[in-house]
Length: 419
Image 1 (cartoon, one colour):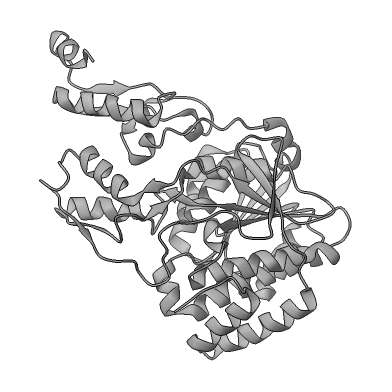
Image 2 (image 1 turned 45 degrees about the vertical axis):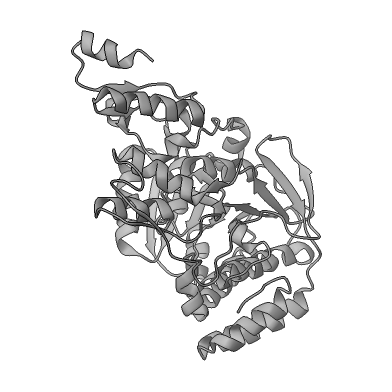
């Protein structure tokens, strides 16, 4: 409350917020008071963001939207995570993506013997390779410019490197784009996943973690339906996986700041003077930070059941209204909503719904030993029927038959709805 007068008395030039335990409400109040002082402000990130747990000058940054989420620090069972990562060979698909690259950073903390970066986009692959080699010199980093749709390439990788753990994060996720080209979702999210699962099984990989999404629940878009089919392919491994091998699925909502998410879009619109485009005044989404999501993925990896494939749900907190997020970002940028920067409603895009869910009908939810992770035991999958339908789906994708692809997805995932 006294920051303005204190800053004037001390002739301060800048304000530094070092209150990592602040709730979202407290953080909003602090930021408002800093803004009222007329001085620039920065923050020290919360412990969840600091890979090695150390605050350095380079860690100090501008206040960002993720600071307003006010989520608690994740308590990791470091020993258990270390038990399955330390000294092991870890393979991450989609290693250059938002989630994939952060997974690589978090995994490297636990001193694996080697980390295989499996990524088909060369620039992000190059960036994460350099970063890991700079920050984790004791870990052998192997960058592979490779595609999960290439079965031969996958087999060679598994044969050469013999991974102990696979984190499958590679996926197309842009909802409107995949509505326009549904065959891409089938090729990458379904066929690609089928390849990774089958090759992992072929080489008896002890632990397999699939990164999924809340959009797989009662999907209203191709992206969500494709991820649900991918989940089913992994769940179907119950009856055919070798004993002692753990497959698990981790499902969560949006991550703040990921490529293609709403936060970077809003920031660009603010930079250009507006307007900010919001689809609907009532639209809500679950949000968590990228580091938090990845820490919980690693934690879920300790829980895999040897007897069945389980879906782990990350505790996403309260859904956030996108209109509130837009107003917060405008204020964070030093402007007034609807005065300096306008907000426009543009209507829901193809495949979008007003709110997301994390659980679908028939999935029994059970708590786990970790307060931020729940487990679902889904329905049994008829793999013979699923495989034949997926084969048909892949053929339809090769023919770029949009209508038949959606119809076949509906056949596989009855709860999927489309226009």
